[in-house]
Length: 142
Image 1: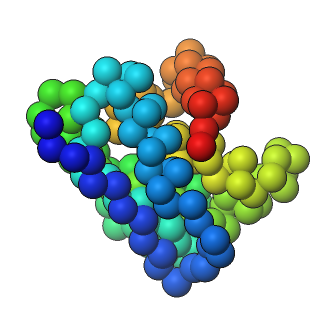
Image 2 (image 1 turned 135 degrees about the horizontal axis):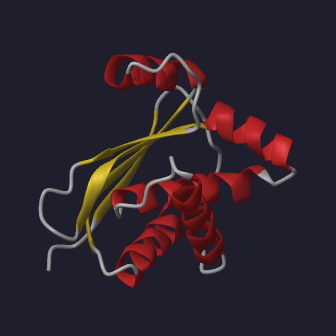
């Protein structure tokens, strides 16, 4: 089996000391526990403006969001894609929800993986399942 290639990029933002190996290993464990095969995943951390432009260009949504996920998994079960995360939104959401920045960032990282695994969050029941999965996988974090 091809080794997972999970990379992290920072577009105009500084996240400080980011534990790449621990996050990479955690993401792989989540994918495997869901029966998926880890493929190529790029996490791109950016600011609100960067993500807003992607939202407008690709989804025609003129709103701020914390995450946009592009699924490239063409092979059944292969988990591949780009996960764009606005650190501005993560910071604001963490403060609003009374979570640490680190905890909220990990929640959003796993949220992106769950989308790549096929989970949706538009309908209330889907959103509830997504939250349950996030909470569960946060307990298995690095």
